[in-house]
Image (cartoon, rainbow, N blue to C red):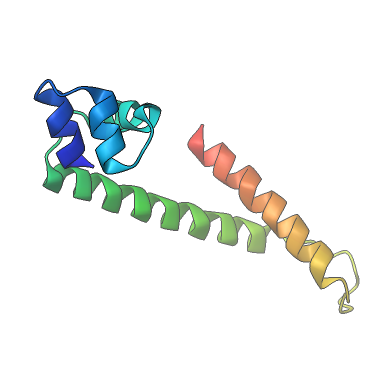
Length: 101
């Protein structure tokens, strides 16, 4: 990815570089917007930070879900696992959206 961006910076045509790398020119432009001017170590560090951020977001979402778990069934077990997983998924998405803003 960084190699392809360096080729574009060296005045090669975006279409040619994209064809060689096997991506669309739009993907190459997206990479340029995201990683333009970075070297390999900076790009790797940015990826590690994004991965860590995603891991922490999931952790916060799980903890928030545990905290907000409904207890209105008087301690009885609910046999509705798929519905609960669906609700959890929606809640995780909501919390992740709140964290992003």
